[in-house]
Length: 176
Image (cartoon, rainbow, N blue to C red; front, side, top):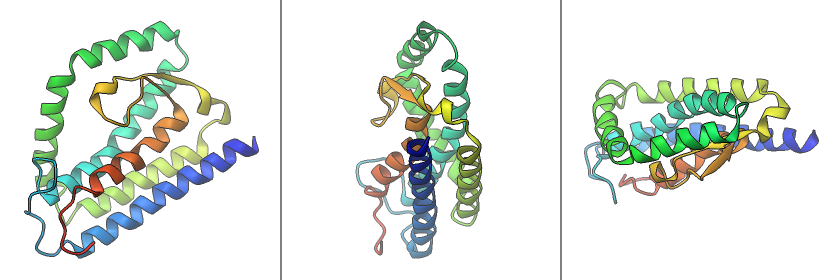
């Protein structure tokens, strides 16, 4: 039990680290919002929203892992195969969805959205049943470099920090 509490504390600390760092990035973005990023087709503003979106997605993934983690393994394996077959359209939707959503959750709104998402994830993490952290499901690894073929609930809570850090390196802000 002590180990799961330690993991929970580390996961909560990582959520807070990203929240704080994101506020810093918003504060220093200045005139760099529309600059292209490194290795993506997004602008800095669009990529910053996509980083928030990673936390939004995790809330849905938590529901799925809790559901599929209680079902026979073959059910989540089949679901992951179906999603993996849709990898190409997923990437297009992911790209254009972030472009469009950044118009709504733009530079003046995305900080508050990140705060709300992190707050919800921290509350969810604090109230999660210790026994659920080891349950998991299969994922489509082609969807994201940090998706593994099988991820536990604890892995899913750790995923958004990896996604965040990956994209942070692609930002082209003058001051970081």
